[in-house]
Image (cartoon, rainbow, N blue to C red; front, top):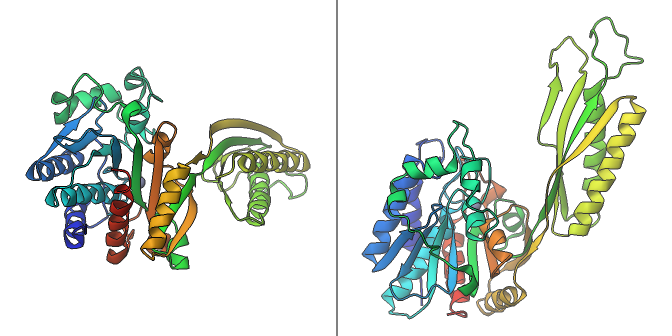
Length: 405
Ligand SMILES: [Zn+2]
């Protein structure tokens, strides 16, 4: 069975026009006007193809043929970051829809269900993968009142305002205990496949991570009247620690760990005052929990030693931590078998970014596929993937799924 590649691309192009920022990438936050318009379009496409479309209490959308038992799930998300790309998330949704349509056209019996996870990017409430967290029980209903948007509304209030809240049903639409397997196809969002000339990435594991926040407190003073000798400059200490940590991580022989100092506040943040206080974060990610742990411990040692050397006060707080999540062995070997059979250039790789598939993988046998991102760009308007790679990825996902239906 062949998917319709032309239709896949044309649908993706159509959805890229549903954006709050025309000409400046795709901005489609969950529950926004654009999200509702995209859901409406998906619903029309589903009904045109004899499928039914429902929305659960949290805004996850479920599309399936009337007779599907829903034991095989596939999908992704349709929300984006601000000024994001045209493929992140929606590619996995339109791919799944294209596969469902191809099955329908070929009168193929199957038990597949497409799931569109709500609020994956966390643009409303600062919590990523919200829809899949509710679905898998990681978040209980009390979270509906605890998650607050930037403009002060709880998630419950935001959901009540959406038009699809009227269609919501009380019961869970998907009981994950009856699902046999889950699949997500996604753009890589990094440069590995594109740089190395691969067509397909088979995700081995989604990286785990640890985040800490460091506060360095020195002594603020007049920038002109204080000699360099004897200064207790909290920012210079942070810069010294940052460079040492970067060097340590860059020199890792296995090259399978990343570290980022992504947030930094300097106080008082004046050009003529020595920074008294600097607060910064360090995030470390790797597919091996033991390595993430060891690297973070080594980084903390550098941070403390730098503080001692620079005679400043140092406080470290643990902010967040998540374990690496392996994808199902059985699915990975089926994926490799099919990639070899189809003579595809594939690479087993870990995912540095977290996806809904990772939430599901804690409960269901889950597999994840990447297609190359040109120059590794993502979450920006320049995000792109060659059309032949988009078509190849969807066809490959269909070939894999056929082993499970
Ligand atoms: Zn995504």
